[in-house]
Image (cartoon, rainbow, N blue to C red):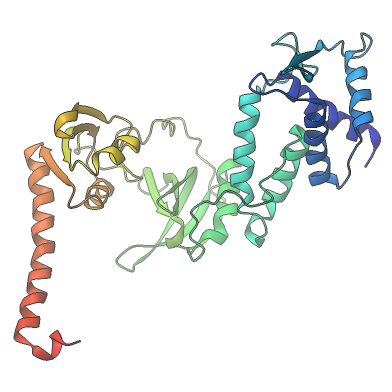
Length: 348
């Protein structure tokens, strides 16, 4: 690797360390930090002497004139930091906190490495690692939920590429009832929810947004239909009024839904809100409110809390959930009756 690239990376790492007021970097810490990045990216290391030379070079008035100052603490210990909190030799738009978040993002992306469908990630991650001197989660200390058997995941990279590059797609989609439907989609947005990936795009025939699960896309290819740019939908706020990924029909209005939880489940719901609108209405009674448009995903979420949840209002939604519980109970009761009537069934 050329020396100038090696040096540039070292200066980036040191600059970030000197700008980080959340911890104290002693000289050996600086050496370790630089070597971690160099070894992980290029398989090389530098000496303590080299780091001291780098600091001298950065301090030079002719080069960076960096205000690096040595601070003593705990007796003879010494750490290094910029005197000026706003100084950076690169005038980088990313703060230390931004860099840390970027590091977490690279760790997350790294879990998709090594598969044929995600070859494109190798270049993206490598460029980020070099550009900012970051090291990915090579030791696999962080785990993410991932469904290895999910159908359609091999098409994710190409779907994302078509979305980013405004490429209209011709898709054959399999409905839950087993019917294959051909459609022309202008891809606008890709989202992951509950272990599945979804494509949102303008349906050419319907003239509205369609929500397509990737595991139900049977085939797709690029279309010659001119792409229609998204000038109507803001996907940063598109899901603000729902739980999940389904946007209901316009006649489904936002409701104030009151919920009561058991004492044991209440802390969990508070620490992991059902929806961002969630507020505590009566802490002593373990009651909350959410402001949402009811969907099937909300039903599923509430059923995951049973028997620790009760819908208080509105009355129609309380009855809706009550009916589902009764229908489910009938299945269990009928199975018990069959078992009583059939001794052979009971012994299975």
